[in-house]
Image (cartoon, rainbow, N blue to C red; front, side, top):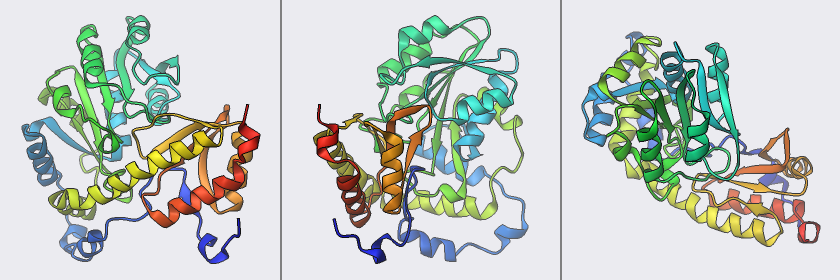
Length: 339
């Protein structure tokens, strides 16, 4: 492959599952931010009202948080206060075990890459110290999903006092969205974010949905002004535009996902059937491949403890995706991976 230095001058960041560029409409929105959003303490009520209308629920069931991280932190502060254990699949989104440790709690890890919500193994891990079961779907890092029926079955099986947290950060890229069904369960929190499909990670706007009493407890468990005023104003207007912000990017990601999975499989790698905006694959030597791609100015996610795993964020952009495939053509030679 002949490299074009002009194309490769800018590092292609495919390691954080971010949208490469915001939607074009966001430029006009940013320029219109009112100056009084700078000098007044921010109020989340307007955004929470818009989100409540989206899900046809009362605003008391919505809490806007500083990204999904803040939502996870608040849930653990509340649920681990008396019962310090979180049951979750491992590997998982690293902030789940991080906040458990920060709260003085611990995770009970179900080591598997086969399913984000193995119902029998979850049930066997629940004990008197379990305060929370955390499921990420689509799962990070595999991109696998748990069906709505399975998530509801987990919620219905939990003993009194144990809460289910379902992190749906990547659900816009999946075939089905279980949010509405999960809102029927009183023992369940649903975590959503504007960081992924919306491409607004820099705003740090996430939200948690749940029952009124549970949301009230989460509201009391964190700072009273978690989101900056300009971030709230921009997020409100982005929600008003809806699919104009998300649909072009999500559609592009889904097309790239099919192509990348096929390409990796043809080269002898073993990609997971992802429904997220990334693809995880088993490869012969992840560290070598990561280093090779870095020579092309492409960053991907490796896992130090698992040298067979490499994760590729999907750019949702034709030129950037072509650049990734070109790099992989050199860094993943077909003959090296044939068995």
